Length: 348
Image 1 (spheres, one colour):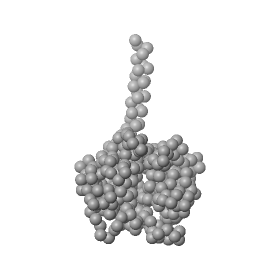
Image 2 (cartoon, rainbow, N blue to C red):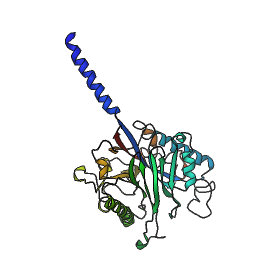
Image 3 (cartoon, rainbow, N blue to C red):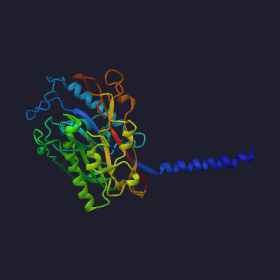
Image 4 (cartoon, helix red, strand yellow):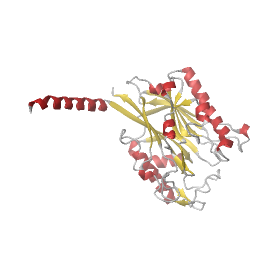
């Protein structure tokens, strides 16, 4: 039996070292999640966009439905990133929220109340009355400045001339200064090709700010997230933003898009007409891929598409279990899956 003692001890030492290395890193999750029409059930006299989401509206959106919607969304948020980060996402960018009230009600939900989420939101010009926002855990993120970036589409002849603002937030994420842009680009209403110029304009607004940040500080850590209504290979993302999924071509001044490979494998965040799109993306500046282990760096991405988030039957089988189907409350979550990236840093 003696010849086996040394190999067993050696094996135990290797396992212990690997385990110790794994435990020597800490992780953060950053998420984008389209909440799919998170309205309150109260009529806003100054807006017609919420008319359908009232008790007497087309969706019969009662207080009971609203509370269930909040419960369902908080249940999802509770699960996101839990395997690597028990506290859940440090940052959550979101779209399709009506106002600050719905965010206050969501963050007060029992399932996530202990995380102490706060939020940044500005009322925007969208004709449907929906905006973007950023939720953050104060224990991880300290906002320093925030402002909306208007997206002027008037030169395209689009009715109203304005679409959803881009939310820009500058802050400190667990020790590292970061720049976050939360987006919800114009939809494909009227067709993908016909509406593409609108998304190119929105992408241009984001790109100009990012270029300015990079000019002032080539080491700037930028996170652009949102429902882009375009895929990772669409011109607005590849040509206007200049985002690449090829790490070998990446420089610190470029943007890295980890979702290109997901899309090429047929993985999406929303389904339509028997096909998948990956509109929900989190794109980062090249500096996040540095090798300095004392600072936060990009680790991996995932589409959070757990089985409980998928419809089990009907026309949307296998797709995200949406809130409403055919105008009726379906007790779902959202018609989008969340997109998540993970950052890691060697424990100090």
